[in-house]
Image (cartoon, rainbow, N blue to C red; front, side, top):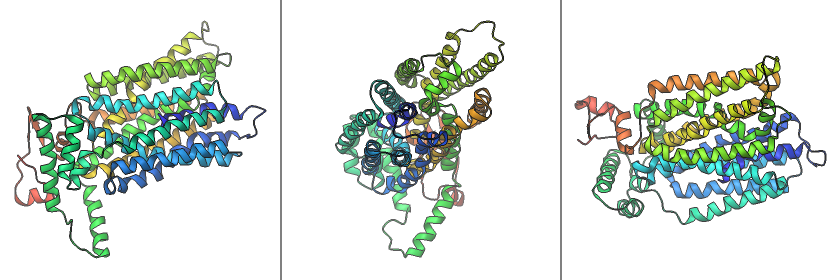
Length: 476
């Protein structure tokens, strides 16, 4: 929710800074930097969390993620220049970069496969609540008072994190088997299904630890060589490069579908599509309410429907709504409309928001928490989140530039083309992950086949086994 406040805050801040009585007067370029710099700041956050997630654990990284965002809100309250606001937003972006891959990993490692999709969807729901909270109180209070209230959400989060346990898979990976059992059964209850899943993870990790060089005293040069050799071999493994390719396209689709663009420039978009006479502030809050309702419904839909079904059906609606909005604006600008009615563009915007919040903003968080094997979850989650940073920055930073140079309709056509490309690629490479354990998904990406309820590996012998599964042993 705190990060949702960060995403939605420019829609409150930028219009306030444009007022004559404001003591900070940013240029149009500086406004776009204030809105988009958090996307650029994702990268250092992602790079920071990649090694730390596996070294110090999920919980400590989670605590670390709360610090930059609190410092950022403090700087916003003290800001008396554009540079101070950009610095504050940059720190908040670092926090979002840390929690981006980390949040999905924590939830996926703590939840039952049956409910995992619903819990992962709650990430998008929480972001929506944060955006709605900011937009709503921003219409009633000053931007400084809004920032103060938003900071309380992050402070509350920090206090909650302190009392949460470490995730069982990380404890297993570190050889803390008894502690992992204690936490696993506390989170999931006890039963034959839970016992089987836990023993499967423990057995797999014990095999990895036995075949690793853990505990050996090696020189710095030897460690460095083995590290780069490990990175090189990792990128050649299908259980790593397949998820990376999937997440590259999923996150590109997510950002250019425009969820963060409309959160940052809601009032400007409404005025361009509906018209300058539209009550943009009221419509912005109404869209936030629709977003909230759709996100709540998505929690239940993700528990019942396949990931692929939700992704491609809602993706098609998003592309259609992009094209429809662009066509409407072109027709309006050229006086081709037989009549003008505000309800037509409002309906198109609502249809667009439905496609975003009902599927395209929820699927990426679900897939990112499910698709990477335990061994590469920190590295893969961090690297796959880097495209989020780049695409967030490009989409939010370029939107006012594109609309100012080529117009809103052509901008929407460009975004629709990017979303369409990503959907076509994902159609061929994205596996179904619903109701499957993380170990089963990992086995499929590694090349194993699934027959009925039993996993079977293709025949592998001698050198082939050693070459293809250098640090893994598949137990039949």
